[in-house]
Amino acid sequence: MEDAPIIQFGRAKRSGPQTTHNDALVITATIANYEVRRIFIDSGSSADILFGEAYDQMQLGDVSLEKVNTSLYGFAGEVVHPRGMVLLPLAMGRGTTRKTCLLKFLVVDVPSAYNVILGRPTLNTFQAVVSTYHMKIKFPTPGGVEKYKEILSNRENAMSRLSVKDKKEIWTTSLPRNPNKTTRIGSHLDEEAKKEITLCLRRNADIFAWTPQDLEGIDPQDKIIQTEVNKLIAAGHTEEIQFPEWLSNVVLVPKPGGKSRMCIDFRDLSKACPKDLYPLPRIDQLVDSTSGCELLSMMDASQGYHQIMLAPEDRKKVSFITSEGTFCYVAMPFGLKNAGATYQRLVDKIFHPQIGRNIEVYIDDMLVKSKKAEEHVKDLEETFSVLRKYKLKLNPAKCAFGVQGGRFLGFMVTHRGIEANPSKSKPSSI
Image (tube, rainbow, N blue to C red):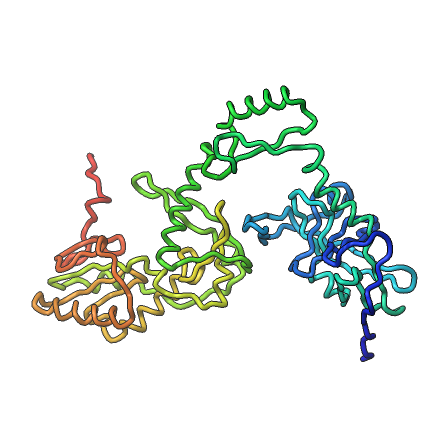
């Protein structure tokens, strides 16, 4: 393997208009046979960005965008969802030191003074070394080291695009009494026209939205989702995430009584996961085993799956997106392909000495059974001791202790065995 050529920079010599060394490094390059100006070199960016306006002007025809689940974050923390990802050739250099590489660009629909941002992926692909002090890029090629200088006109063009409209064409005016709530009007207006338009805008300030809370027509489902997410965050079951590996959508499932349950659509993730073939108990055998027991206690784990913590390296895979941001689960969520098998393996292990003797467990449903009524407290104490040891909690609203019968796994069980469930049986006439 040949040694890489040495890349070095000498004393900075700048030609043309003198500027500070803090200017942005803006270049021109060839992308998909188009000469693209206003390309900003940003070694702090983890992605290569092609802005939507430039992408549309290139009219690439048969080049198709690939959907991505990646979210980008701006300086203010705002979430930007890319239109998609596109694979395009980018060429830099001249003559024998011209170099072309195939790059992945995220196409983003946001206003920008630039057409493209080249980040670390491109710089690493080109093995490029950037010096913002010298305003140059250097990278090795078969023909030698290419010395790629900034294009001053591009930088000036970009800077003018950033500042001209603010200085010459538009002014900012506040609408309501809050000075932070502003919009823009033309600076060419005379005082009378400016006053009339400003008064008109202030009279109709209610039609503007400066924050999400100003959106009165927002989908009520968003409020339900955000309320549930806040509960999960408060409980320590979820947290915000910036760089998820797998992103799923939120769906609301109707519950009895008109309420909704927030669920995550993990179907795509489940397709990528192997099936855990750990066996679940047969429900008919569990129910039959309660026959002849004088006292029963039905117990339900409180948000059972959430009591199993996820390995840190797996949290990025169980991420979901809402209108408020991107989050990931810290605890095992409902809806995963192997969640039931994982929980069953847990309860089988911790209750192994008791199963069949004085307890039956089906995932997060537990039934303590006692052949003799006087033994029931002892059986409960044994069960509670195991729960305490492994820090599992019960949902008191769904527990019933010391009963002779009740609903278990959809069946009405008593000391006589299975009986008809009155909530699911109707009289019929002949």
